[in-house]
Amino acid sequence: MDVEFSILGRKYALYQKEYEEAALRALRSGWYILGKELEAFEESFAEYMCTANCVGVNSGTDALILAFRALGIGAGDEVIVPAGTYIASVIGVTENGATPVFVDSDEYLLIDAGKIEEKITDKTKAILAVHLYGQACQMDKIMEIANRYGLYVVEDCAQCHDATFQGQKAGTFGDIGCFSFYPTKPLGALGDAGALITDNENLAEKLKMLRNYGSRVKYHNEISGVNSRLDEIQAALLLVGLKHLPEENKMRIELAKKYLSGIKNEAVKLPIIRAGSTHVFHLFPVLVEDRECFQAYLAENGIKTQVHYPIPPYVAGCYSEWGYQWEDYPSASYIAKHEVSLPIYAGMPDEEVKYVIEVVNMFVQ
Ligand SMILES: Cc1ncc(COP(=O)(O)O)c(C=O)c1O
Image 1: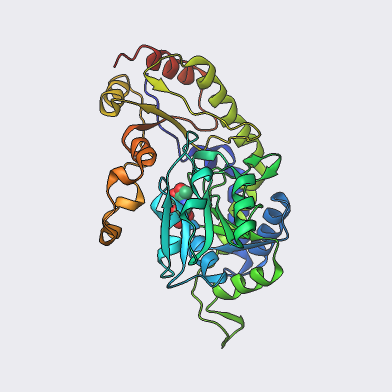
Image 2 (image 1 turned 135 degrees about the horizontal axis):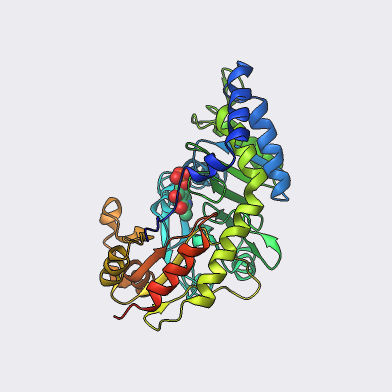
């Protein structure tokens, strides 16, 4: 049996009529940038996230870059970031000229909140919590540290649309929550898109200026900004996606439960969920000593897998001047060398899930 890692066109095929109606509505409106569709999406997403403001931008990476810029973080400032994350999280810091200070991963594959405090210096201005794979970080501890030291908290929610920690939605704990709507994400556009959420009206106002050349009024450029706007067609498509987000998440969570109860192989370490957290399983990451052998074995049996992520940002080529070594962050390094993401997507047929479980259970290292 062939099992795809995910099927990108599936969501479009499933909700085709709604997507096409939405796209046509935007196309026929004669207005394509900063219009009614974006306003409607920003309002709906803010309400959905139980927050006061949403500001749509071009991508999740732009959301992160503009979040730190809006907070006034730049050269000479330090930001605490996870050692194990996707490079875009760190780009949000370095594009502003600030310095990322890495903290190793915990057993949930997220920033180890217990190791943050030892990295704080008089230059530290913020903590970046990345809710990777679909699970929220330990936000009570992170917020307690941030409040005690007077630090900003930015949340990278690119993979966790709808995940909660102690009943509160990830993205609403800190000063700003940053979302990616890249097509594969739990809430995906059919192109690039992103957004920021915040309860702070001043920050929201500043973000709206930053995404639009630093202006509130055309040609009155009050601050130094960029062009990063979520266009009308993507906003209209996202309104369709948002309507279906809860059912899509539910389907993936059900699949993950099947993996969690069905996979019984000591060679395959399953993801764990922190007490009080909900995990939306954007990805289903397992850890295997001999990753190459495991991936090859699954591929021989028709099962496609991916790795998230093989090179941690602290050793990425673009940051080589810092001179970090893999072993500087043993846990993040271990995850980068041994993580394998099993196929998981809303609508994955039951027989495929059963087949993956069967094949994984027969794996011998
Ligand atoms: C954790 C994380 N942060 C940020 C991003 C960047 O989002 P985008 O691709 O929309 O720029 C991604 C995208 O893959 C991501 O996974």
